[in-house]
Length: 283
Image 1 (cartoon, rainbow, N blue to C red):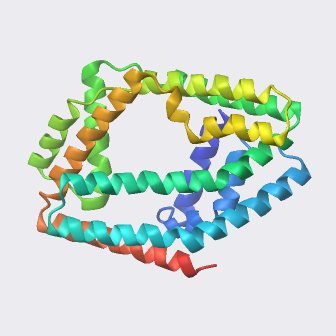
Image 2 (cartoon, helix red, strand yellow):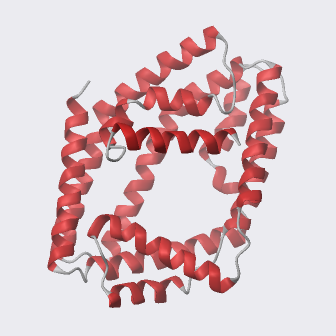
Image 3 (cartoon, rainbow, N blue to C red):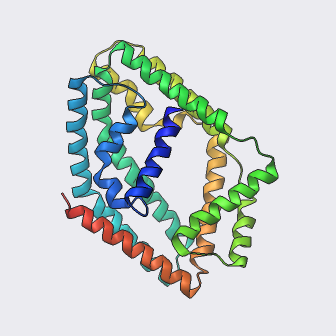
């Protein structure tokens, strides 16, 4: 499958180029990576490619000049909160800020995305529709059918690995406590795929209509800015419960760090802050 092959090649390439794909490398090469990703969905003509490249450069420059500072200022607050004893409300606020960062970027890019979509030919539109459908099919086909016990084991291991990246090796008690929290998780894969397929259907219907740019803006504004409206009540409820459990996991771990783990966490945050500050001026 083309997309899986590309992802694998990217990992291999990074492993040769760097000990790991650094934030600086990824951020400074987003134009190349975005073109590589876009190519999975549609082949642009020369004029469209020039517009895309110019628009991306503009958005990238805006993001570097206005958003990176927001990120490292938030990290500085997070570091202080963790070292003083972070509360559940503070974790909630941190996660809300992260979501807001994404929404700001999405809304900034939205009119440019709609303009690009409006220039697509009938053949290109069908290509986009087919590729999104293929992605959904791939995810469903590649999904391992696990028993509840197997899924719990995998979820427990995955969450431990995510935490380990920031604080280092977990203690036996920390691992056990994380797994106890994970028991309350519920798998949302099927619900998420139902939502993605529903979104794709609406997107397909919108692309099939030959209307002017202003009408496209109205139709796609809802799809891009309010996709949550297509989520089922069950999906929304399950996602909310899982998010609350994740907050409890973060709260437990961040308030029960060993001295070694706290040092590792502070070093990781400091390195990330330094990278973001360097990227802010690296224009």
